[in-house]
Image (cartoon, rainbow, N blue to C red; front, side, top):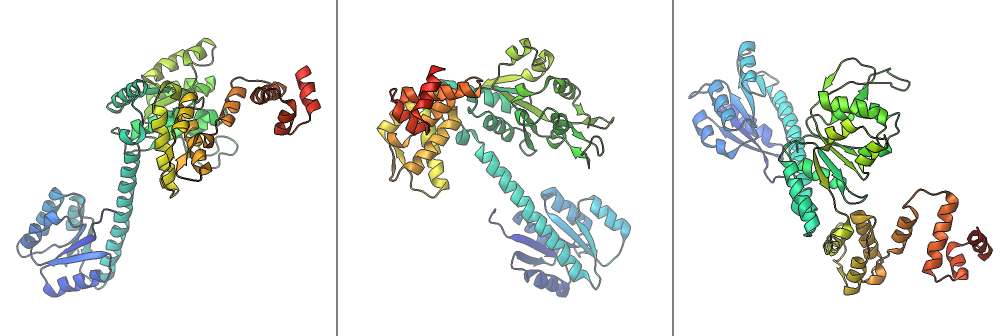
Length: 446
């Protein structure tokens, strides 16, 4: 992943033994092995940054402990295996304290043991590089230039607040309509902050039943309730050192809010079924589409918890307030979708752009992404035209779900939308909804 071969340097003054180790280790094509007969010669090549050094403890020009000290001072990540003819426990312990990975005695099985140790280091080396690679990819993905698309005043103000959030550990409250990208912003803050190498743990409060949310957040001990077959750590412990993102915090049952408040104030949690507090250190980011001040007035949200969580407020603007950002985002989504599906890049026609700008996108950025991806699938050439952009289903879904209604009221709402769309042509509406005309007349009479 980084293009550098796995490099092993052998530092051994015995010529025959040196060549034996070089030969045996070089049998693995993944290893690049080089031998040195003196410490002085080896130290000249320390800037090459080998991954592993096998170090003879008794060298003619320098003590092995001194060479180990120089290696670790130069780069602590280099793995050092000390090889000695003496089975001296005190020396081995001292060397291990000063950074040696292992102490191997020159015995009959040294070849097998050395190969086993280096193979294990190589496996860990691969996994460590894989983790570093993935961390860099995640950080690159949530780099501002990659995830903030737009230059409208509304989004530039949001970016300014996000930059402030990154430089501190202040609690963040992200508000905005559904689909504006609250979790994406939370991830961007985490992966650009000092906690970026620790866990980002998202919890959608609305999706967890009230009776399970306490266990989900704080964990439980074995046998603490029916079905608790083993100890389980909660999301607070899982996020220790990193960021806990509580999405839709406004949906949290008020009975759990007091326990959340205590956890935030004391920076400790108590697993269900335990009396032992557990210290936790995690940054809190919360998000909601609700007006929490109204929720406080209605007795659904604790005022003390609100002020504890408030911190730095970041309000995400709805897409309809971002003007020409709609087109910038549409092109961005189109480019990404084409790349991911090995398609030729498709461009938006003038009519398609006009249609997008004329629509208010109640589902915000999430809806725009879906609309563009469907349009690409529907387009048979390298252009996305207005007729490929299907906004009808979005309009209907938004219109009928703006408020809570009975099933009968929803049916009437749908009927009215279709009658309006097809100029009160009852025969056509009956065909479209797959119902009889008499059913429509009966519904209208009601």
